Amino acid sequence: MRDMKRHGTNRNSGKTHCKLGHPLQAPNLKPAQAAKGGRSCLACAREYALARVQNRPFDPARADERLRAIAASF
Ligand SMILES: [Zn+2]
Image (cartoon, rainbow, N blue to C red; front, side, top):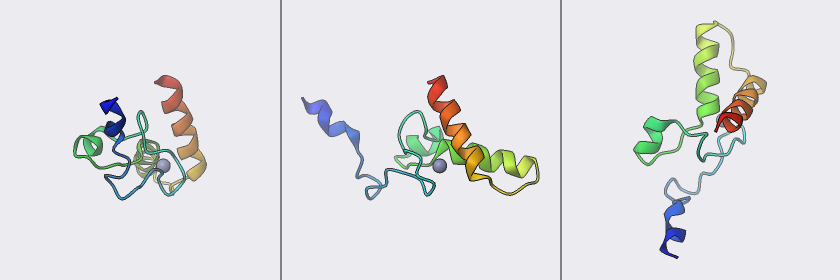
């Protein structure tokens, strides 16, 4: 019963999705941020990193693909 309190969805002012609408919950959370109690979208972070390495702009469609891959591998 007391497990119900553990969701912590209002710890980051009710932020439940990133700006692209990806759910900010495991497994789509950057571990470093999650450990600090913050929430950061892993799919977007990976796409940002890849875009930088490949010297191209951030591609929301690719971030969506990342999210699907992350969810599938969980
Ligand atoms: Zn995202």
